[in-house]
Length: 252
Image (cartoon, rainbow, N blue to C red; front, side):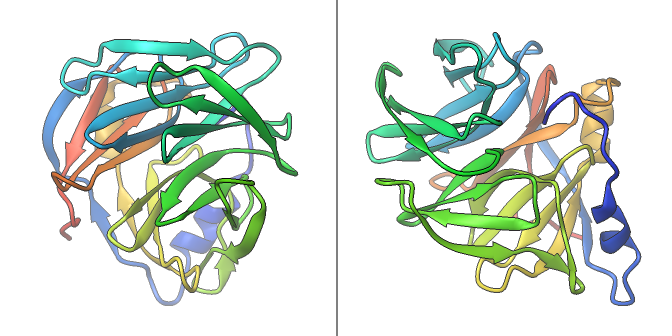
């Protein structure tokens, strides 16, 4: 997410359990172009249209992207000093988080014009929509469920793997009754039960990272988009020159 180094405690709890979690390996269906300059923080497909948010102060944006070519069709800059983070759709709006400023932006879906702001406590990492609520990650092991109209918190959910909390939950996507989450600075996506918070399994995307060719330690997998109408799942990462459509549901 940010240009920092952290101790990845989740790797211990995910990989050293007495009851090993199911691991599947991402199977590539096709490879698509992606803007190699995009420091991807959020990704979603809504009504067949791909939207993406990018991070870093002075380079943060919300953009509409042509999925087939990777071309940016339109975009709006997130002004300094904000560091753009995750995004999610709601009605005719797109809501976007910022990292440490405890406020987010509302954008009109058509034309990406700014139409308002909202506030929250703590850090903002990622957003996804689950029915009529939004789900937010903040770098901890907790997911927040919020009302998209007011952005008031409805409840929190602790994410655990074999009883141990899983931190560094990053980019989120709601897919077929599960919440998928990139684990920051890893090549793992966890599959979370939104009722219990229990990790059901992991998707290993290390092979995709290798194919993308990115070697900087911060240019990790971070971007999950689900096209529910066509039942297609897309994965990319920070400054990856490609986006992958992968098979869903994952096969062991």
